[in-house]
Amino acid sequence: MKPQTSLLLCAALLAAPAWAQSPPPAPTSAPNPEFDNCLNTLRAPARAAGVRDETFAMHTQNLAPDMSVIDKLNFQPEFRTAIWDYLAGLVDEERVAEGRALLERHAETLARVSDKYGVDPATVVAVWGVESNFGQTFGKSPLVQSLGTLSCFGRRQAYFRTELFSALRILQAGHIAPERFVGSWAGAFGHTQFMPSTFERLAVDFDGDGKADLMDSTSDALASTANFLAKAGWQTGQPWGFEVKLPEGFSAAGEGRRTKRGMSEWAARGLKRVDGSPLPATGSAGLMTPAGPQGPAFLVLRNFDAIYGYNAAESYGLAIAHLSDRLRGGGPFATPWPTDDPGISRAERREVQTLLIARGHDIGAVDGMLGDKSRVAIRAEQERLGHEASGRAGQKLLKALRGG
Ligand code: CA
Image (tube, rainbow, N blue to C red; front, side, top):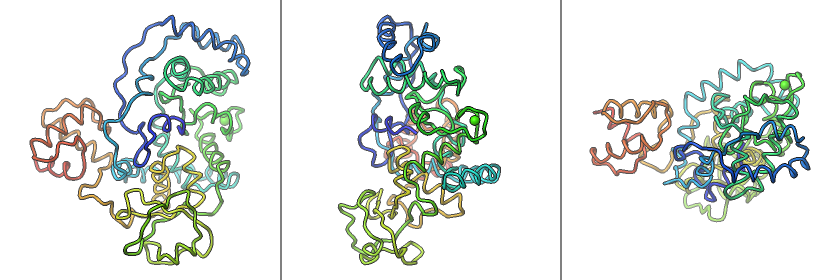
């Protein structure tokens, strides 16, 4: 969960949060007297926040700042990822298959989590899949170092100081071993990618070993995710929402997630579910058209807002919501995205990278992440092919590269 992060990074979250795009490479860091002075000034407020002096000293002595996190804080993406590209990578066949396998493997735990918190297994597993790729992507930044750096340099130091003190209290309480306490550059960590303060508010010990361990306990992580959603107002048994068909000539101007209207009003305005069935008789929902009125449209209920709370980005919420439907056996959206060049899955991204390497481009490792090196190579191939040299890889480029 990185709501503050995404808000910090990018005010315009219409399509995709900025952290989803590749940040600049990390420079190395050296000891820094300015940093040492800053850390010294933080001792007293840390103590006031419940961090014992010995805890503070143990975790901050000989600490060097990692200035690469400041570059990441200030990073402005070159271009905004289209929602169809964003979803094609986050909700692909691979993630659906993996999520379904995990639903089975953790069925017993998920049933107990669902009983206790009222959040269904597919939703919990969908959050897990989007947040950390089911526990496979935690981030590698030592949290005290990155939060310490962000507490002393850059904008938003006050915010990151509260997260730093929170991180130190978590270590002090022995929830997580110091060497395991790594995460995203901005401080989100573990299976659920909670910020430290979120951990303190909402992490739970579900396997009963006395520690809430979001790094190494799947049970604790699944329960903590459900607890987050429950505290965010999750309504048991209700859907997040569903795709709808807009009537011809419908104006969605002024509508949005937060503009909730009664189902009867939406029905009166001609909205139907995409399978043609009528809307529910009761309840209220907002209308989201993330790619404009020509693309898929969704009525979103209160539970979508709970999911939205996880990361404060509608595209992100939609990825989790859609993945949860896919895990329940649902299919892709009925309405195509308004593009003649749809996005590609992670498997297809790896294929693009393999094809780029075969053409002699140096793009680093085949990892399914289309970073700066891949983009340079993609532009070169697009120029060769006579395509627009956008640096973006979609179905069109993939097909062309397959054809040689
Ligand atoms: Ca535990």
